Image (tube, rainbow, N blue to C red; front, top):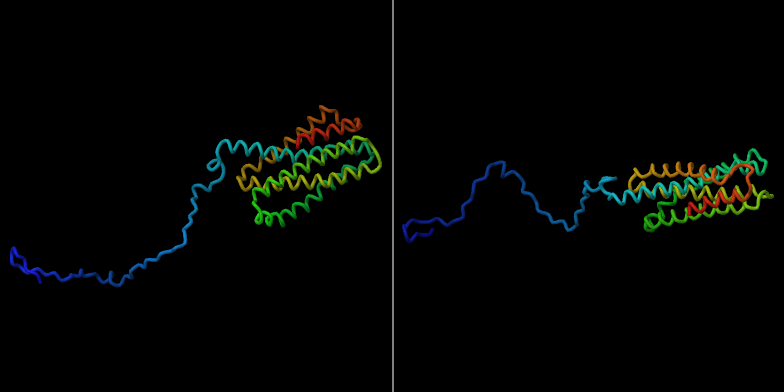
Length: 240
């Protein structure tokens, strides 16, 4: 006890305790833990697709790119299939068109299956952006090279073995076109799935473009080989 010099009253300096209620006594005290690991949180407001995460200029660029890639793949399809009537008349073979479609459409099934099995391994091992860009560039050049090869083999007119050359080129053309379409869908599907329909729009535009080129050049069954070579030359130049 301490005494006050002013009043002489005793002052109790002993520590006092505040009485606690029964529920507060039974409540366990929270433990303080320090976690040295950094906490990562995903801001859901920034993960929405489409207009909210892409700038206006970027959307326009990606839209044009999607149409262009779909157009390239569509040119491979439309120019090759559209020449079926010409080759059937040139070789006097009514079944040529059926065989040409089989050589063009069946091998891409294997290519698509291999893409599903193998592509993700390369994507994980290397930079996925670099891998997709290389695929698109390589496949586009392959499509252009195949279309140019069709023009070269057709320039000499009918000869023995021409049908085999056209079939072999059709196999490579179909494989390159399928790989190009798969890489393009993967690219725009990762950015924003709403860009994928623009690929289909590009393919449709390629069909219209093929008809316009054929009419302007006069490409039809029975036309001179130079016209047929120019037809495929325009296709190769457009894709490249």
